Image (cartoon, rainbow, N blue to C red; front, side, top):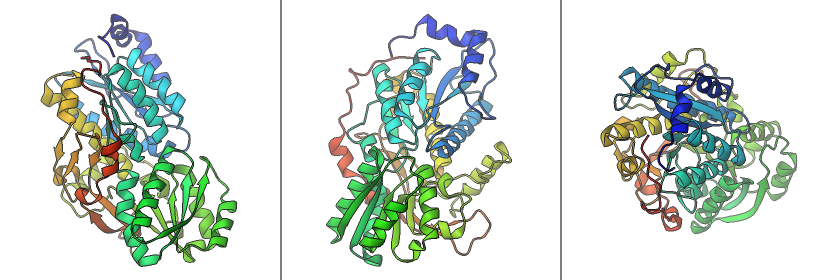
Length: 430
């Protein structure tokens, strides 16, 4: 991103800009956080979240999380005395669309920062465009270890736990509790591949054996051939790296065949939008997450109440881990801009690198920090299962344990990550 051009600045001042931005926002109630006025110039944030495709549900929730954080800042006067304007465009769970959206937001919409992504391939595509221009990109919910590993960038910050973090929290316990014969069921793209690779390494390091790995194309709805293969192999444990709408379909079909009772199931990470509304039988096995709305911690109840007040009548009545990531990432970015006293990208990057965040502020059990070498947020990882004694209808998780970040840190990502130098990263100020 070279010095801002007058063309980019003019886009927000024209009447056509509002219409263009709205046209690309998708079918959402809350598309604009700030109502335009003559001055001061708004700080534009591009929300690069899925509204369609495999991760549409999660994309909607992370977008709402970012919107809540932005509204809190706007209610206090914005940042650096400037109102914040959020523009959302659907990335469609498709890397090519992610690239086009990033280019448009940076070059036409004058976006200072980009926030969002669930699909790791989409996140990688966005981050390549962002690095070309020096635009800070917060990858809020992609979990592939490659995002803070070989595909890391100076401008990209990864806010979710990754597949290695979750595997370390879940696999050793499952070997002890369930057995050593494992089958991996893997979504056939970068997140699935890298997550299952991490799972395999930990299984084998702890005396287990991977009998076979079954690759599942994205957007699979009929899992009958895979389930037949599992019935033939008879593993002690099935470790899945399946996400979005795919995991919903898989869970339903496993229950129909009664296979959730014949072998243990470990899902590397379970996002809240993927299981919310499913019946108790379909939330089987154990899985990792980074947050739960009934954690007995200071501030959690207030956070849930704020979500329900701002977004009344939502189908998902309480926030989950995806919303939490979207909110926390956006809030921390805006705090860093405020502390830096400038929107200069290099100054804000330096505020984010190595940043430490208290457990109380993050609504988690342990302090979190951003690894300066990989730009991943190292945070508490929770192990959960279905809650058979719920306190209320939405209380469907039972948290079994929590791991400190230092105990599940992904050392492999640090070895693979080669951040660009500051000198090689274009500097800008919006």
